[in-house]
Amino acid sequence: MELADTILRRAHAREPGAALFASDFADLGARPALHQALSRLARGGALERIGRGIYRVATTPRQPVDAD
Image 1 (cartoon, helix red, strand yellow):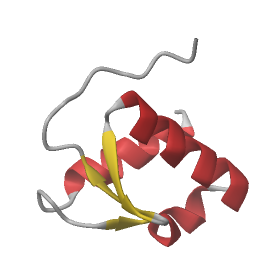
Image 2 (cartoon, rainbow, N blue to C red; image 1 turned 60 degrees about the vertical axis):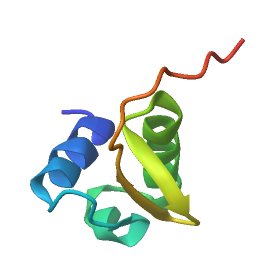
Image 3 (cartoon, rainbow, N blue to C red; image 1 turned 30 degrees about the horizontal axis):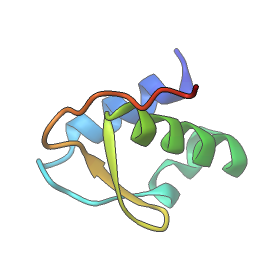
Image 4 (cartoon, rainbow, N blue to C red; image 1 turned 90 degrees about the vertical axis):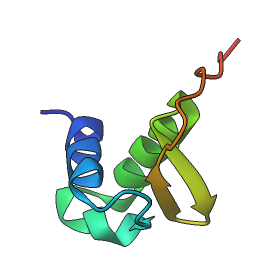
């Protein structure tokens, strides 16, 4: 299972709107990999970044941002 899938599975197990801290996922791997996965999930619209290292499950799905 990919890191991003594991993060999303854990995020969806939380209460709706609950804050997710990058440190909540420290047991999943190296810090740079975690931050990269969280950043990609936020750019893709699955998570919302509400602060530095703080996320929540996106309440309204949005269109992913093209990298072009």
